[in-house]
Every structure is written in C-alpha cells, then in structure tokens.
Length: 492
Image (tube, rainbow, N blue to C red):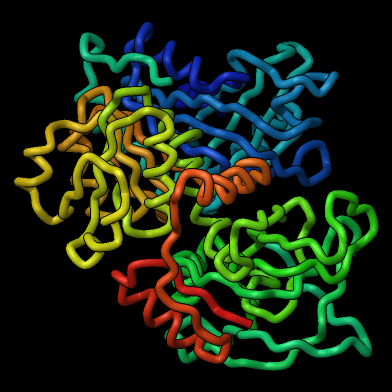
C-alpha cells in the first residue's frame, strides 16, 4: 500500500478568496463553506520559522476536504514562488495519517524531500513534501486527531444537505518584557493564576522602556473586554497560555511619553489609542509599551478616556461586517449582541453598507439599543419574535455558542453567518449557509475614521463604568454579570 493512502484533501491557493468561493458555490455547487479570516499560519519552512497571516475556507465534497487559502503575508513560504509572489491554483494534495512519524520516514526513504512542517492551534501536526520530478506539486501528510475527525464529521453532515440547485449566489503570544535595571516603578494589575477576579493583585513593576519601533503610552484609561475574562478564567489556555504573573488587557488610550528608534509617525505628546497584545505586557498598567504599528491618533473631538473604549470593539465590529460578511445594499441582517461595543460597531458598519439592520439582544440589554437607528430590536430568547422578522440574509454574531447556532434556522439558505466568538459557534449539520469566523486585526486608518465619525455622525459608544485600577476585580465581576449597558474602563 502507498504510504500516502487516499487523497483526502485538495488545497488551492488564491489571491482572491471571495472570488474563488463564488466559483465553488455557484459554478461547482460545492458548499457550505466555513471561512476563517485573519488567522496566523505558523510552520518550519526550509529550516526557519515563519508566520503568515491568511484566510482559509473549508468545505467537504463527498469524502474529500477542499481547502481554499489566501496568504496575506510576504514570502518566502510554501505559498510563494521564487520571486515571492503568491502562488495561485492547485497547490497541495493531502493524505490523512494516524502514524505521521512513521509515514514521514517512509516518504523520505522513497525520495521525497521534507521541506516544511508545523502544528495548528489545536495541536494537529502536518508535513509538506516535494520532489524535483513533480515541480509545483506539494504532497502533505495530515495527522488525524479526535478534534479534526469531529470537525470533518460536522463538515460532512452540513455538505449532505447542500444541493447544487439551491447553491448560494456570490457574496460580495508575546514573551514578557524584561525588566530594566534601575528603572522607575509603575502600578499594574497582575493576574497571579487562572480563576476568579480575586486572582488579580495591584503591584509595582519596572517602568517599561520602548525598543525599536515601539512607543510608550502614559495611560489615561484601559478597557476591560470579554476576551480578558476568558483569558483570566483559562478558557483559552489550550491555545493561548498565559505566563504568570500576567499583565493582560488589550485596549488603552493616553499620551505618548517616550519613543523608540525608528518611530516616525508619532511624537511625544500625541494623544493615542492602541490595540495591543492582551496576553503579555497588556493594558492594565499606568504606562504601556507597544508597537507604534498598533497605535492610532485620537481626534480632538473625542475625550482621551473615552477613546480607550474603542480599539478592539470598533475594529472587531466593523471588520465582522466589512471583511467577514460583506452584506449587499438592501440586504436584511441581524446583529447579535448589539448592546455591546462590538455589536454596536457592527450595526454602524452594516448601516453604512446600506443594509436593513435588526438588533438582537438579551432583555437586559434592550435599553442599550435605544439610540440605534435599526429596523427593530429583537429579544434573542423570543423565537416567535425572530420568526416574525422573517429570514435574514446575514447574521453578525458577537456572542457565540447556542445563541448563535440556533439562528441558522432563521436565515435564508444563501445567507452568511459571521462570528467573532472564541471558540466559534458550530454550524448545525443541517445548515447550508456560509459560516465565517473572523479574528480582528489592527487597522489604523479604519480606527481613526471610526473615531472621527462618532462626532460627525452623532454616534456614541456607551461607557457604563469608570473605575480606578484598584477595582480591577469589581470590573471583571461586572463584565461577567453582563447587561452593563456599555464599556467598563479602568482609569489611571
């Protein structure tokens, strides 16, 4: 028997993922697709480590997994040619194996060159092979794992209910920073272990110093995000383990007070907001060092403390709509969690795209949507109310779990459900709609535009609580209770 076994995955690379998705859906009749945007592909390639941002789409067709991959980073990599241009077309043929080390050895013994390998975030291993006898073709061994087998089963179940005649139309961790000897001290909230909010302690830490390409922010405020709660509770430790004591937090605003070498776009005294690594050297501190590339200017029309409420929520919500779902003008959509900052930003972006928008909320969050110019506000626990609104063309999910999963039943067959939830919701086996999982990436121009439009379009991002850093535990408890009606900020 061949070491390779049956070809179970066919992979295509593209420079236009949406165009290729449209081909597979409308001309080949293959779907439904699960799309994962802004993921980072890490591997060992020709003896060195690389990390590439990319978008991936997956669907089953009979017993074969079809993968579409758009790499957004620069080469060299297996996905770029000798001139570092992205490769377009059929690229890889993969076989599944439960003995990846033995099969890899057999492949090499047969003359194949092992030139790349890695693990995905779930721990699944893969190895790439090539041969001078077949230039341009990559053979892959893909390790079977319980998680992967379950995922394939769910994709296959969805594919069985997908018929060509009803195919949808085209639709448009960082290391902790070392202390500097003799540096001044600042106050920071440090998480000592996974668990309850009481695991935080307020302590003195060395004042951080900016390195090349970095700047330091004298913080005015930092935001507490739902992602921070998941980090604290350890829900993400299998994918994103913390190193304790951990200084978490992803959103901060303040004044630039120090600049590292090579920074030319900012100067000392600038009012800035930043979306930074929430897992190491995060925002819960009086001074924060971060890459200049993660910062944006705060317009004079926006209070500096209030600006801390924007980065992650504003960018996640807008990218969920503009990059993930991409609704057509006139389409009807439902935004889940519209009472929160991410949901509110998604509502704004969907309205700007010309969509008819409904806000989906829990009863406790209904009042938070009172100023939104939506068609209606729907209680997500009210199945009759959802049914009365009619089938949606798209659903923008900021909540995840069972709440999102049940909404596939309230969508058009050619609809799109986009989600920013971590972990993402599971598309039901009888669903035919496209599913898109999006991970936010920083976009300075879009964030600055969003901030300006708050004033110019008479929009607001509600802030429910402004608490001192010493009340970090209370801030996390409030976040977990839900229904707070706005952002929770830590004030310095």
